[in-house]
Length: 139
Image 1 (cartoon, rainbow, N blue to C red):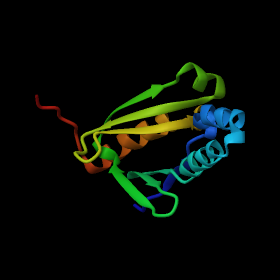
Image 2 (cartoon, rainbow, N blue to C red; image 1 turned 120 degrees about the horizontal axis):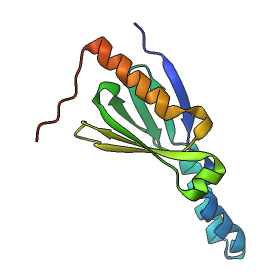
Image 3 (cartoon, one colour; image 1 turned 120 degrees about the vertical axis):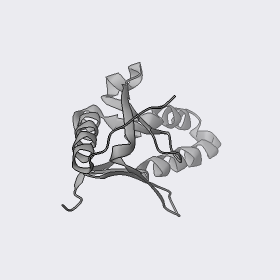
């Protein structure tokens, strides 16, 4: 079966709200404008892609780096909604994995309406069933 894209998107600019407000207040200093622009570009160019087999995270403004996580390595999902994020309709999703290179992945400021945590969980269960993989913790 071919790998299909389930969801593709980036973080909400709501995570930069504090920086944007400070840049607006201190715009007469010029430097905060460039700091806000850099944060805007970093957020805009960090792309999350959930496929039926992998979670890909591509980031970088000038040079791109793509980190790939096989979905059967996901151990746990945690949804976090700080007060400001809850009012803005976004959430953080913390993915705990058995991957040695990235044991914890943070998906920041994802719109709640997308339902990414549920899509991620469903695809993890499907790929584990297809590949007949079980997660065993040995302590």
